[in-house]
Length: 203
Image (cartoon, rainbow, N blue to C red; front, side):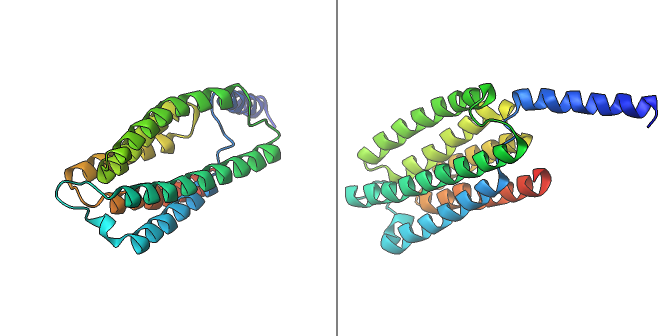
């Protein structure tokens, strides 16, 4: 190995260390694939139990029981997705010899939490008022904003996923009556697509 090769190797090592200090590199693409799968299964269950939720009427007001039942299904999907993501991230971090709950992990948690909590509260208010479609749109829009807000500490693909989620959320508002279908596309298909890209690129 000549001096130039050694210098380039040192630069690559420094760059990797700097990236690890600002990027949450333990995020697993497989968690995105599984989260998308959970969302598609949840959407199918919601449609099977409440087929009318695909078209809730011109005023977009759903029966309270339907709205809260679908919210319960979404909550189960959320818990399963978060649990899977944490488990896979911890496993990947252990293989890499890093800690999940480091300064970058804590910063990521804060950047994700603020838009997600705000969106969750907004969506619950929509459900309380029976606005099922608006709640579905809001979850995608606020989730997209959370991803964009946290993207400086994640892979670049996460930013594009966030933009895509916002686009679908706005599209759902423009085409009322199909909130469940848009929700399945946003949390299901997009997660599988971007999770596959990240898995093949980084793992």
